[in-house]
Image 1: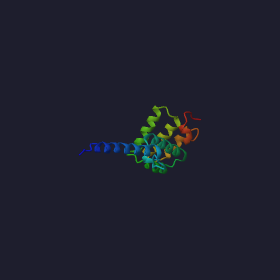
Image 2: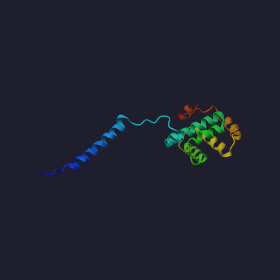
Image 3: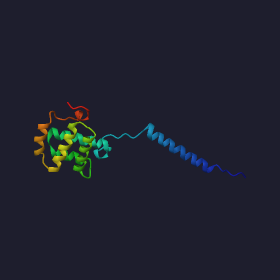
Image 4: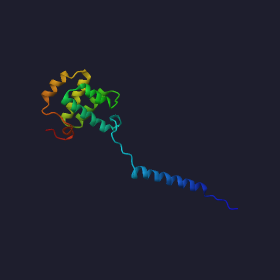
Length: 141
């Protein structure tokens, strides 16, 4: 009688081929596409952009309650600290002044719990209302 010694090699080869085909299918043929992801599931850089857009919307409308609701969707541990850190980071990295001002104004309003003091200072220093398209640009007009 002749013994068959190839059994374990076929099993290992089949497993390797199966894993490789599964990866090719899931990465190349039919990759996962995230659509309408909640804000808390975003990458850190997209969360920063989302905060900047919320701050720009706040400077336009001065609706602190709506800004708080939007920031709550990020599920940050400390919203005020996140905004403050982002404003400082934006200032050191040379982001547009309007973005830094918007983030700082929103952080100040959240820290004080009122938007009344921010309204006077933001309107007197802002020449144009910041919009999301303007915040992303390198120059501010």
